[in-house]
Image 1 (tube, rainbow, N blue to C red):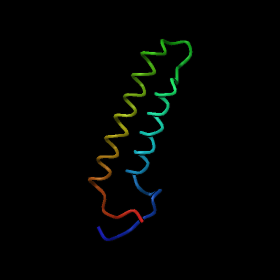
Image 2: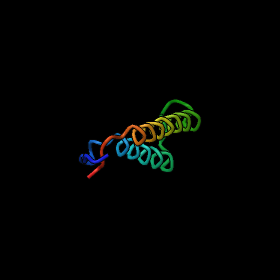
Image 3: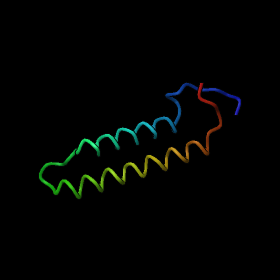
Image 4: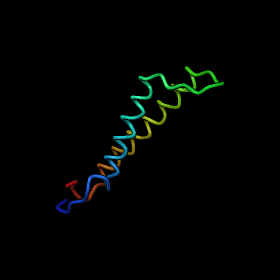
Length: 68
């Protein structure tokens, strides 16, 4: 892993940013109108956060260059 790439080309960075945004939305109480907001919002945010975490982990494991 001697090559370098800009931060915005990193899948790990993007997945981590998505995870942070989704967590902040969950704390802010983002709700979907017309549906049961508690259940739907929690399920959607939890699923998206889980997927983003998996992408971050896989991105780091498959990384072939440094972020520089």
